[in-house]
Length: 568
Image: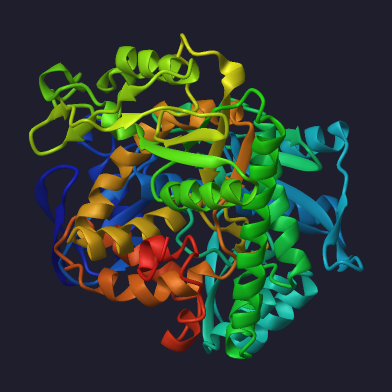
């Protein structure tokens, strides 16, 4: 049989192998031990920067990089495969019920087992699982992992898929497949159970040994390995305020008749999307008003409003819309950017690579900030600095400020929920708001949508439009952005007095219209190509809005911060 030449990026060497060999064959030969340069265990592979499962047959020369759990694509492959094991056990233990993997939590994936028939408000009734049942569920999952059962992929027609998923009570999956309109789909099988996952799975269940199932709210949390320590599961964090916001959005999607991407696609195709835009914008307006009412109710003490949130969560728009609602109530909001309180460049701390760490708390002039806030609370006049990012230093240019009886100060920044930012300021004078795009819309029953992906698309569109940042740069910097969020923002979410969910139920069809052309510009030789391909595959399940429909988005919408046309 003819031989082909493969370059293995893990070993840095060219290898010859038989045409038609699988990636699994290659990985077992090229990555036999920890000194091979491969991540063990190998979970998937990047072939010419495209993610492939290990059953992929190599028939042409390629560049191949095998990935394990320390690579984002390896982690996603592990989690998808673990979800299938959970799906199989739920079907075995709870026939006639349906598993819904609803959204991501800091500790894992939030899941519910639901009755098939919807209630009057459109939601499905949750089947409450006992602790004893959860213990049996987890034990059965461990048995399947220990048996090292194979995942098998089969190409099936649309009609075959619809019959299969209807029998499994997976109506969201049926709706999705109908809305896309393809003729054939890849379907995975595990010990007689079938399902669809939008990315490769591991070759078999044996590598999925690290997980936990923990009761949480009405359902349970599927915990998977930590990033950086795949032998341990994520620590359990019961962040009730965040979970409540996610649950609220999930329930609202159900009430609006949009329980998955397939139903959203149907709204777009049927011309109902403008009504959905108006409803979603009205919900945001109501939430802004509710937070403003909370601030007004504490007007005798609260004089400072801090707003924090991760990248591209819409903090700037949130602060402006909240200021408008406060003005309606008779308050006089004044806005200061916390970025004005950076220390001079030479005093900025450096990270482990010797680069300036602008996201560290030590990059802020906490002494000056605390002194000026206390002075403002005492009714004194202060001179607010302006930070010159080009020169890297604070400038005082006569910008004076004083807080009067009806004045409130609104400030937004990444450290705004961290008590260590203002240790000497009376906390009763401060109202904290956490803003983030907490989408609970799912692709289907067992494939949730990452809130991080949603925010990355927002940032890509905005930064390309306003700063000329190419999509590759956004993608390549995103993991660093996420590390900063994990360190400086997410640990302090529960300190918020109010949570504002900036996600819109209609926004993915909007983001697809703007992001897809940007992603398609990325060259196959780019290190960002694998991630761009993943995002394009995800967007392929979504029907984009037309320019006329996008024009219906109000100029005050939070999405206008990213796609242009905002009048705030």
